[in-house]
Image 1 (spheres, rainbow, N blue to C red):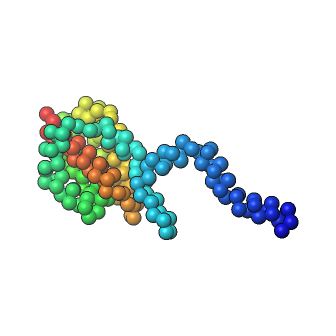
Image 2: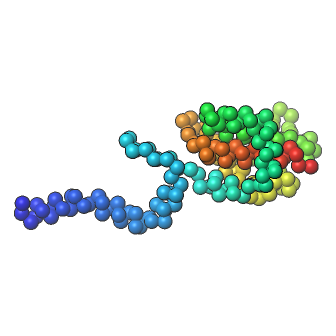
Image 3: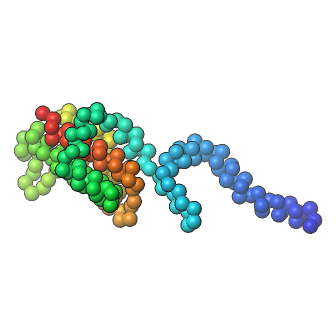
Length: 188
């Protein structure tokens, strides 16, 4: 093998590892953050699953005392959502969102005049209901932001067939939604 062939062979051998190394060094913060969100990894036919950082950060804002947790997880709605979680995590999120939405609509009807709360034949969009709950002081800004994140998760699951979420993310989402629904129902 002459020197030119050796050099070409060497470059062919190390080119991809060098490119990967350069990308990793250049984007080390992004790669570190991405690896921190890795929830599962398969080897053959390569599959990686990541949990939602926004959802985890938002969930930290709504952590409440254990006394409340015990009450809201004992409701029939919570038991139903938790049973669904074992079978289909995405469906459990939708069930919990439905429970939250019902509680939010009931609370809106309770705090606003009937003409504002409901237009006959046209229910208010949930975004307007959540805005009104924030404006009226029923929910706080962290809960509002968290609900926006959960709404995006729910929309993704509902409108993008085949969207999978892991059980841990679904559990965090449904417990937060059920807790917020319970608080809306029990807040005077």
